[in-house]
Length: 130
Image (cartoon, rainbow, N blue to C red):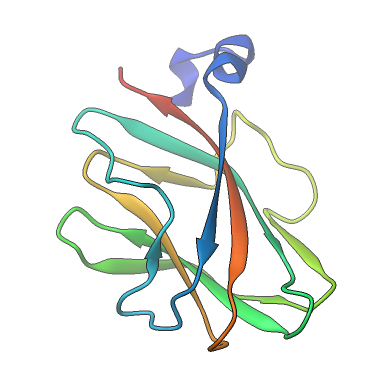
């Protein structure tokens, strides 16, 4: 699907969103995007950044929220020390080579293992409605 756009077109579609993750329950994680994708839309996730919370080491789980409301674990555990910073994928990333693809009706979700705290994750992505 990414073959239908060149790097210049993808850069024009590139977005970055952040979300505070507060859930410690993997059965009810925090949705990253405000709503599920509309039908016919594909979202290409190219990078995820997770900073430490400055107090605790937290382990974050990134999940795909399926159209039927179930969850599929995509990245787990992602340990982040208090003063640390994690990038998925580790090192460099490519806007033409996404780490995750979401189709219409899906969303991205996350949870962590440390009660009483939260982490802010940042997601870099672009959408295609072709």
